[in-house]
Length: 328
Image (cartoon, rainbow, N blue to C red):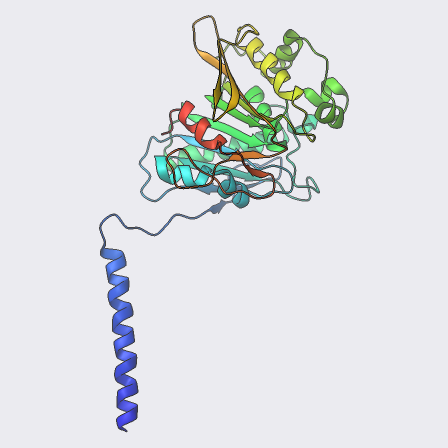
């Protein structure tokens, strides 16, 4: 009987300790349960049959920016959101993130279909699905419609160019990482020629492809920031050159960089329009292969977690994008 009472007292002591700990956790000022990635269904007609995930930091005020982050091939929304550093920055700076996810039924490698005519045109396929996600997110979180940005890696970068071209009124800027210019596959006759070789097009021809995606649109067009590894053999560096030609032309800027310097030791250029606004910015990441640049750590300019196609090169692309976009 004595042993039983002792065991009961021990159990009560343990329970009391746990209860105190739980109360302390909930009553500690400023402490809250961490936000988590959530799937959203019924966000529209979803003609591209994509899945919508989102990340909304706890206590996010209304009127905050929205970032759309598009994963690369073989990746998914959760892995890309964490690996790239976007979810980390959402908590740090206070904005929400929409993370579209491809389905195997659409593409066996989970690539967004940036090269398919039915998925890269306004009002159709995957592009329309992503646009519907933006509308749903802005409505649900009362976000700032003038501060919506889109970014992505590889095929996600190709789809970023699609969204900038087909829905320019929705995005203030785009961040393309190891991606491709809009209409590249059509110009080359094959997405693989576009990726591995490149296409011969003038700046005017590249710009015309964007303008044709949104007939009659007079602007403003989204600004572009591009990142490209010099040792990328999946999406050749010529694609960043072509992106620069395409979007400087769209903005009426010339092909001469107004700023040429280095960031974290890597060549960096800025192209300004006639009014002096930076409309295209490029980072050429020396020696980097195919992937998203990150800089894991707890420093103020660090973010991301290295993994497959997420490469630690001491430069976090998401941080550079967010800073330029005024997110933090």
